[in-house]
Length: 87
Image (cartoon, rainbow, N blue to C red):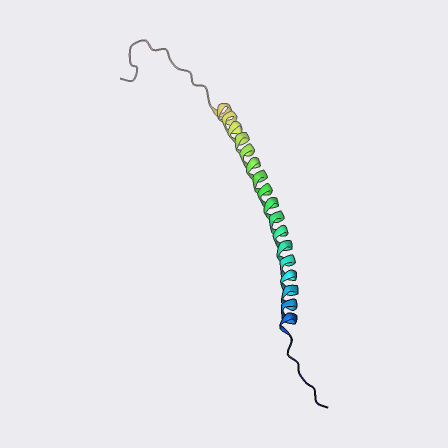
């Protein structure tokens, strides 16, 4: 038996191409939505990390100032009576 090969019609090719492009468009839309969601989450995470870092740096500066005050020693100074004891 002899099989005859028929070339697809141009309209069939166009229909197949349109289906393929429609599927690609849906896939790209989904990827774009996921990408936007990821970026929003990442920016929110970075914003929170920056806020915590700023808050932490404020606390550490305050703690450093308090520590410096507590570690200083009081020194007793002699009254100056217009004569230089060293010179």
